[in-house]
Image 1 (tube, helix red, strand yellow):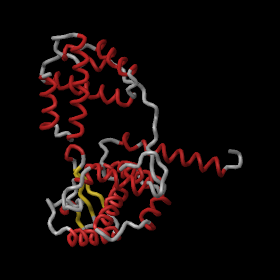
Image 2: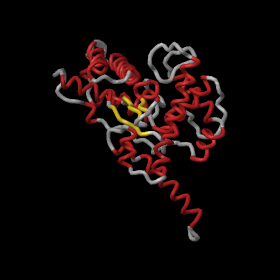
Image 3: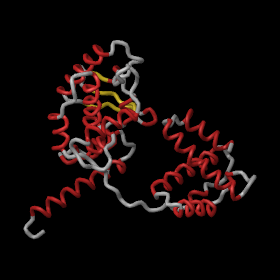
Image 4: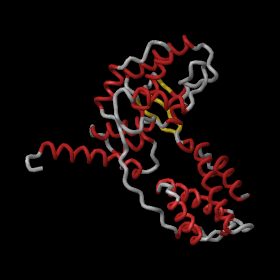
Length: 295
């Protein structure tokens, strides 16, 4: 598996992929290698052809692996062979001759405006540090649309309260600047005062920290989001990413330009953002059915 190991190092140090993505690629590729070596002991994995890859995909589907997970594994395998092409280890990418399973279109879930207003305007978070931090992280996710990793990576230097902006470092270290309302800027000042009173000694300059002054970790953020969204909504997945979907959907419903939403979300291309237009169209269909006399 030496080629897989060198590819993983390439992703980690040259492409600078996130730790989560690197682990995902490593797991998928080693699963493929194990399956290949079980069929062809002693044969190097890079000699797998498109027929074998198809057999592997069929086996995954028979094992009830979801099409979405299968597609992720195919993407990892394709990236691996592209790397081998670059290193002149193979002459073709066999994955190019493999068709991915079709995915059922799944609309992003989101929380309604009324529910978000109820959460932020009427819910008691508490006056202690944990309560104020919990409110702040929910507001940050909803008012900026940032990702979980971006939230955890925020430092005090990321925020400019004079210019009312937040500088976010996204995927592949790509930076974007998000404007924030003046009222939210005041909330940030109050949060920082509370934080510095309750926790005078932080581990580093992280903006959001635990009660012990350490950088936030994903499981804590998930618990907080689930706890508070559970008070106002019945959406199936109560996760940080739901607030990112909510941010984009609410902007689009209120007439925001799709290209502007793309920039705010930090999407590399418009196709990733267009999924939110489906939510808006579903809402239009519902209004039409309710309001039109012939509907």
